[in-house]
Image: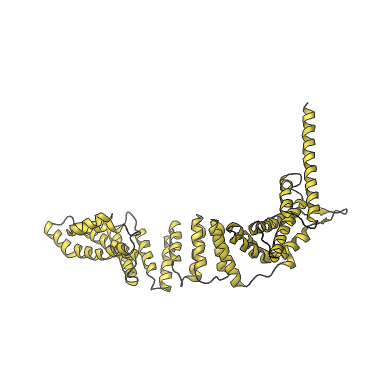
Length: 417
């Protein structure tokens, strides 16, 4: 019985192999006909591409690639004659055909009677790919119009990559478009990938656009943003550094990403070095002074002496003040300066806690309350300018108004919390 079962299994396997060979023969015959039904041929080849008896044959993938390209060519010809076609299906067929052809190439080895290795399909594959170079651009446009942004990205990825595929295409390698065109194409690929939520691919497409000197800062900004969406903070850090080197004078916002990257790595010295370097290059940029103030605050050790704490806080305070002077209407700069003034007042209060009551009250009136009144100006301005990001000003204002005995404003702030 066991031998019979084994024999039955072998017969079934052989039958399956013969069936797939028949599929390949029929597909080859159909592709040579006058009006091949390419979509049907492609569908019929799915089993052969999955079956172990035929999936290792170059012929299987060659026929599948030929069918995909044929479906595209047929659709393009119909469009030129004014007929309507399924642009998404034809664009996808071209992409699939390309992938099938690439799969066939490493399998395409034929050993002749003398033991010499030759190829049977490779020349035809290379010619077909090279001849369809511009079609991948058109296919990308078709897919984008059909709301298939993932497909549009794939088509244009092939289009932008082929001019570098000299190892595969040899003398048939197409000439790359002008750098400005390549930059725009890669930027559009970033948009396609972003829309399809393919954030790693979007990151690299936007970044590649910068290599072709895409104008302005948009490509760098988008690459950094997409790297963040992909959760790749290392890539975000790398791109931000390069962006600052090339476009820092246009957009110093990169410095925040660079500093955060160094802080994440606990490389505080490098972070400060980059800040000082940026300030030296653009001393009128408020963001840089604000960032340096935050960095100085973040490096104050928990066990630091009062003298060290005092010195660091005063340095940070002056940096925040400089930021406000440069951009008086910015909510965050006003918040940080007002916050540091409030903290300065609190430190004086704490340092005076052991004084006799008369001297303590004198310190409040002559030193603390004037600082608090200055802090109010900036904290109130911060809330008015940027309420979503400066809510930390509210408890500070409440405490200041309480200490100044201003119940009306204290209640107003409490209602905002």
